[in-house]
Length: 237
Image: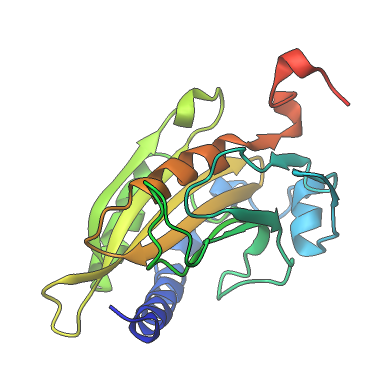
């Protein structure tokens, strides 16, 4: 599938995803806590983002209270940096970290046909993150013609305490709705009144072992300040 077709498919998915946001999720706003709850510092950042600081391979965003360190080994998404914090899509999610594909690089894992971006966003929490949330998302995907390959609630993603969330893989289908063209992987996890969302998309059907490896490394290196240093033995700066 060519890049033009991929972009068209991604636009279609963005439209579908915007529609799902308008149906059913409004009943889950703020986990039922109501609008009078005081906004956290992180939510204030989401509503008015400010730039962080980059030192070597480390990005710190104090307002969002996160640290990200570019992994030493990446196969596909070899360029990682703080993203431009312009609201993205109908949800108005704020890009936080952006890792781009390596283009023509080739090695054991690199998929040089991939031209895509792995992003981590932050947004206001608008969906309850538990098994009920899984059921809501699955039903909405299916109603909009997006095929759900897998969707599940995970209590401790990557074995990190408190890193609970919903991981999903969905397929955009061809014009006849028979064959998958694009796979989109997403993991969303809540922190107080906001949600972080990691997302990547790629053509369906080829070996994507490099993407899978990068996904794990990039998410592991995305650290909340309250969880301490990414590498405790190195101490805090």
